[in-house]
Image 1 (cartoon, rainbow, N blue to C red):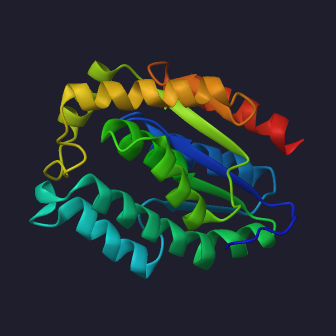
Image 2 (cartoon, rainbow, N blue to C red):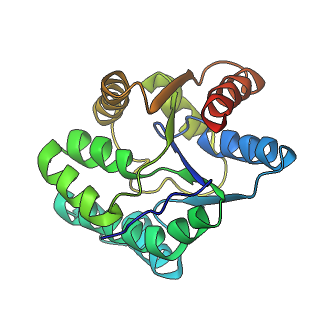
Length: 215
């Protein structure tokens, strides 16, 4: 089991539906933190390690991906997460680094537990096994209506949509509602921001929330 020693490091996870703007806000927060004199490391899920990137390729781009059952998907995400925690996140936190994670355990709770109807109990047990006690200090949920999320996905001009992005409206409605329910139940960890606001407005709201926790 991963054991997190006390340090001045901080783990900040970013959550939200596809197209919510997480990547943009992670980059802006990293810049703010660096200007404040903090060492910052940004990671993404699944991925962030050589093993994790290979798992990501299986999840996202495998030619048989549409045949993947929900249980397999959950376990693959957990495997990549376990490697990321032990190889990257824990050492960084022990150095005093602020780690910004593009998704973390709450993605599995919402996407597989709620979106795939696996239920909370098995997902929570697998999550806990994967991460040990390396929980986020704060989780930023960038909330956008499902219609906005899907419209933003359609506007992406580069690659073909991956298997997660090809899900239907009903799936993404469950994902959004799942995040809001989690946030309501754990207000001490979660911060919900309106992702339809201008980028700089969202950035300022996130920075205010993070500053409170940084002290």
